[in-house]
Length: 240
Image 1: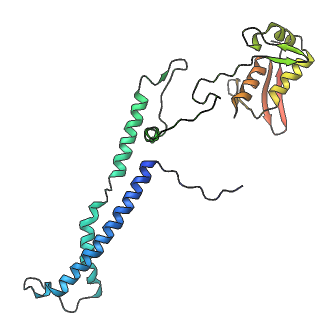
Image 2 (image 1 turned 90 degrees about the vertical axis):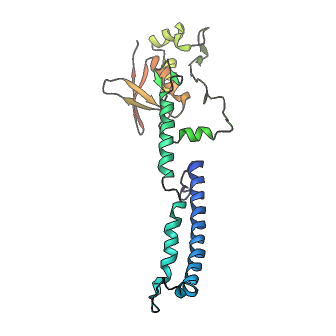
């Protein structure tokens, strides 16, 4: 369903600069019109009386634009043309400060901070309220396959990790029909897309962390989703 032409996305600073530039241009235009008109009136009434100023009596019509254009050149410095370049340079430096910040570093994944957008510092400076839900948007979100109930049997050990339940592992090793069917449904009924690397390892791309956790749990229990294309899906099932 079409929503029409999307509006251009601008930061608050860019929007403010555009408004100020437009206001300065209108003010400059008004100054040029007023002073240009006053200059033409002075030229016709006073300047021709001065012996040191010589104007031809038969001047072409476009001579009336000379004085306004002179004022336009004088007022052109009102609009700071270099402000855009200066702001972009400052934003780039702020982004580099984020990249160089040693405290913004994740030791577990060996991942430093990286500002992919030069406007990120400006966006962060405008944050007033933070709204979040309980899905781990701002906190660490680990999806663990804790328990499951298959054909009336509850699987899941005391630590809350069904992948370490000996009874469930034995059921998978014995190719229990109910357990294999359950794991197949877990690996199939989702929107996860398997991606196979040149080395042969399979990773999953999922829109939901819940689906990703279920598919990875089925993979750890030897029901691996290998490929999915349209209405066809390919699995590999091993006994470990």
